[in-house]
Length: 117
Length: 95
Length: 121
Length: 135
Image (cartoon, rainbow over all chains, first blue to last red; front, side):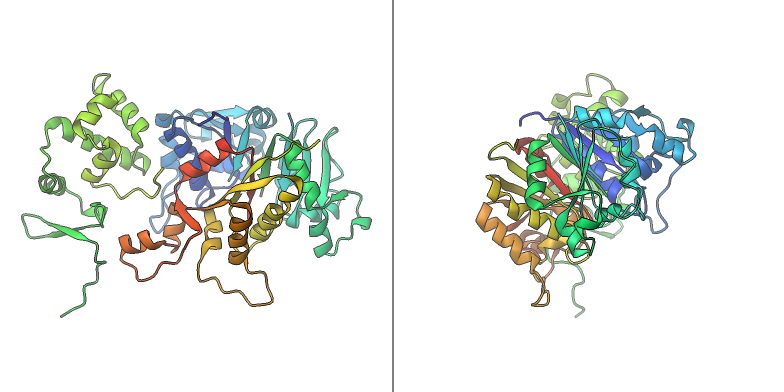
């Protein structure tokens, strides 16, 4: 497999839809194939990084547990768009561990392929 | 090295267009498709960074009754859409 | 006679107390919440596997991984987590392959009673 | 300046008849050959997997999306890949999955194929462009 760099952008909040989980599944498969993609959370996607999440009322899985395991797949750090975080009145200390701010424009420009969820 | 950004959300319902402002680089292209073409109606698409070209997909304007003549935005047809994906290095979808 | 409510491609394990544990066509538990160490022992027995303490270490590690991250690890993550928890020597694909020769992540997860993974590569 | 003869992968994430994503993807794919390009892989993910529902029966005066995908497969020799994890949980099963889960009839047929996300990654690596059509 030729090695293109892949950026996975998550732009939706967790729980309300399956976007976050599907984005993470995609990133995990890339990593399992030996090419961990870069993972970036932007817009409402930063809400997936909030600490203290749980399963849904029917026992449906969220995405927080999965996110905690990504470093074992060499997908780290969890990049986030700082403006999206600020716009939602949140700060880094409210997020799970392993998050780092990113320059989203530069990050897009540095990757060959971008997948959004 | 440039990026084509596709937006299919109305700017009046979603913040994708605003968010995109911080995600574009000089030389990038933005194409409004589907409900994204409604950005041609307000002022949302007028406050755009320098050096970034924004256009609307003509077929989606026409089907929605937004005549190209009534907008300030340049419109392109699907052939132009294909050409943009080929001339840029990558495509990012905002939805 | 009552119609059989289960799909035809299933199989079952009978535990010492008479409980039937149904398996899907790939040998995974139909109801992962029914797992107990006895289930793993029965599965192994049927498949002619002898489980040593080294096997159990990995089975526990797989269950712990699943509890923490709500997913079963792929090979790369299994090696890494084994290395973190059990040290360099055991955290190698050679060690894991010697325990579960066909595919440590897949076979190990099945014996650990984890659900059948939804996504094959 | 357009490059010559690119191969495309499309990721379709929108459900047919609910969102415009399928129509947009087909319109785009059908326009590729005029410029010497071709779609090599269509990968259906999220609600996009419903595009492969083999019993899709739209009114006769509306586009038949399933037929259009089949035609695309014929004319551009593209593979139509459906994420197995997304499809099976939504009730789209091919012959093999039907048997595995003990259901009576397949709801997904060739030329659509159930595959894993690894195929999406392969397509992203091997083809010149990846374009996402989302709901």
